[in-house]
Amino acid sequence: MPVDLVIPAYNEAAVLPSLYANLAAQVDGEGRPLPRGSWRVVVVDNASTDGTREVLERLARDPRNPETAVLAEPEKGVVPARIRGSDFVLRPAERQRFPLVVHADADNAFPPAFIHDVSRRLAAGDADVVTRLGFQGVGFWRRVPRVARRHYEEIGTLHFEDETVDTLGFSEERALFTRRIFADFQHVPHQCGLGMTKEVFARAGGYRRERWPDGTELLGEARNLLYRLARCGARLAWVATPPIVLNPRRLLGEPQKLWAGRAYTEGMSDVRGADTATDDTWAALDRLAPELEFGIMRRNLVQRFILDPCIARPERLEPNRRYFGGAFEEIRRAIADLHASGRTELYIDVRPLSEALLDRHCETILAALARIAGK
Image (tube, rainbow, N blue to C red; front, side, top):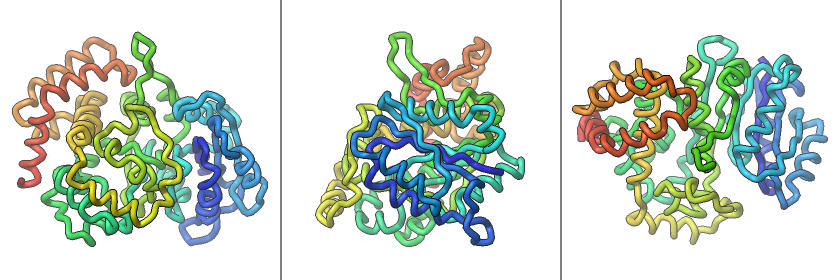
């Protein structure tokens, strides 16, 4: 089934050639190059000032590269850019020609059979949404071993690929957060490489802006979309290996903000260039290991992958009692009362309850996770 790969791009002129080299090397299950026209890249130039549009148009003209549609979104911001791309690919003619869509980022490296695998899994009809996990490769963590150790001790193995866990000698069984939460709660991580049928994407309303009564925008466009996908009955699946390789520039450019969970909530700073860091930059990051703050990250993981999936689909609660300890009944009643009110269409409708449950029961849930891990 043909695929649209939608990517927003703000000032990505420097990384676009490597992105296209990666995409031009996409192959099918037998290792043969994917034929031009069997899939398409849709790139949204998001008010770039570095020549991104010119680079895109040059790459799009090269017959060795995948078919490309270049769009423009003048309002700076990843949400407007994703909406612009979504509106384009959901047009009737585009839905007929390319029935699947994948949302991704410009600075990631995709496995060689990524597009083929998304198409194969969704065409099989067992899932409506499939996401590929994204990780920093083992080479990243080897360069910052103290940071890796602290991340493992404070969070677990959730953000490590299998090779990293094995190479650094981490214990999956003793980790706090592992991929078992994806399996247990039947929810998927909203990282790069989020693929789905356009039918279910349209049914969920595509990407959309959600605002508080004072006009403030609720951030987290992928999380908000996945909530609506869950509510509309989409079947969700995730793939661990081979992973998408994430660009380390934000980890190198603003590590303390990122680990503390403030990099996205306090406004995105421009860290382009950090992906060409020197050995001194890596050493400086590793020296920060004792100072990194993990409390907000733990709270976010409890909210995103334990509480929110149950708010979206209350039937996920009972099979996962062990995660909630003595808070189970109170959480169950609160979620039942919310659904009885009928106000559960958007994530912004349920976010106040999600925050209240998190404030009241996060430590209880973390304690339950620790018991599960044998800590």
